[in-house]
Length: 316
Image (cartoon, rainbow, N blue to C red; front, side):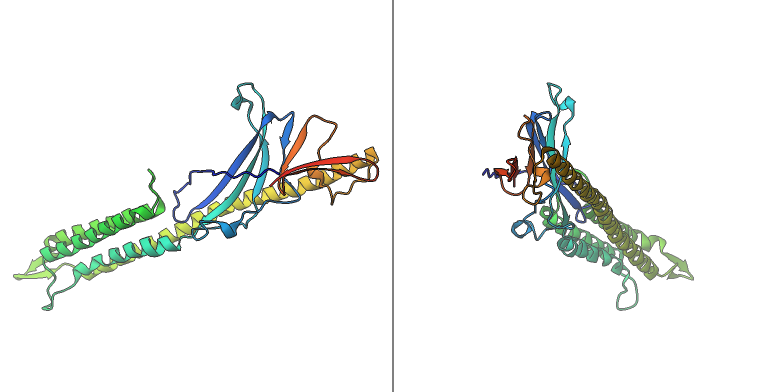
């Protein structure tokens, strides 16, 4: 038996963070040309992802189960200096991020701080509005609170050069705070009119507060729907690929069993497919062989009563 232990790294696509779905995989390529070695997936025993020992199980979920998708292909001749093609097989599994932590610890606190901005329209005990200095102090305090919180949570978000969804939400929250800061500075100058030597509001400032809350609530609804749609779109694409893989697997299994039955009839050998899977058969009289990943690594020679032999080479 051969047992290998390795660490593989793959960059994540985090544009939809924290509502992202990550397809991760490994590609194994043979060192011999495809004319001599062909790697094919095991159609009888599908590999399983050990989710019980997954270190990031609290961060990621398996939306399509623990089956590992395996698909064989060949390399392009341009990838080889000798112009040869090599057999390769790609193993992949899909991970969906559990976003509740980021929603509860990043999005909700920042959204709550932003919703406090319209309270600058509150009145003094005598019924008059807050002064311009007090309004600006209140708006600046909220913005500095959001900046301090952004620095605290900066280690919890991916440090990438492009904007993720959670960073876009943070910038929009700061935009709403800037609008409130400008309103606090300009409303005393443009929101009042002098009538008979008495200062009167042109329009109640509470209408501004109501409009602020409604627009921000609509943006939050749009943000949540956009996250759900992007997650659903990514899952739909991966689900289509998985269904095609399952369809090809069924077709290949049927074709492999038919080919093995025809070959056994020609050779006069009574082969038993349940003991020797047709997809794992290796033609002993040919220099080329097929390597089937799956199960345990073994190389067994099985003989039936007619004296015919089959060889299996399998890798877990």
